[in-house]
Length: 216
Figure 1: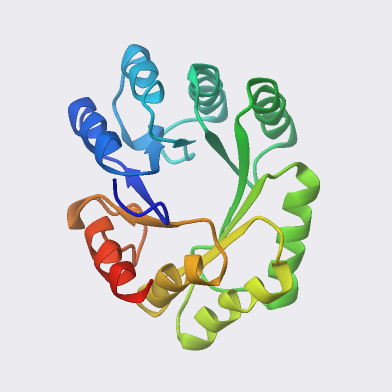
Figure 2: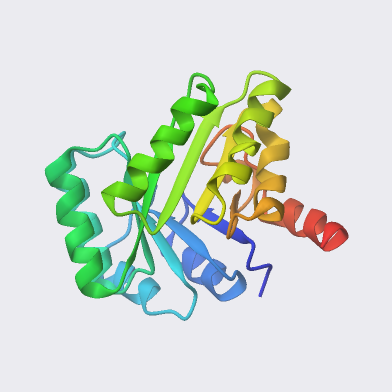
């Protein structure tokens, strides 16, 4: 098994590749919006020993479709369900209620693909996410320069000991993906391979594993 500090996002691959990844890594994210999986295959994957985050973004599906996918995955045994901070109240509440019934932990995730807001704004997002019912708050911004990256990293001091993971996208944000678990995040996200990144600046699992072996 690879480092427990790395969550490998699985996207744009087949069922057999997903299964192989779950036998290799300690934590994976199933991007249901970017995976063409039958319900039987999803059930099989979620019955593996590897802890799993289920995510279904809005680009490929409407809320009704996403709700169906995520409710099914929660019932099938997902460890975490990722729910967007900006999602509709009813959508969010239905997922949180089902997750609590099934013992599935809730990740409330905030993404800003354009910039990095002020620290005050980001702290408000964290606080609101906890109020919504987050077991883990995920906060991701876009870093145009090193000051943006530093702004996201500064949240670890104010958020501790809240369950929090924060990092930034883009070239300037790469360092935050490495620093996140060193500052207190339970894990950081990685791509399976260079061709399977799900966000700008995402490193591969192999790259992060090499870095962490030298740092930790």
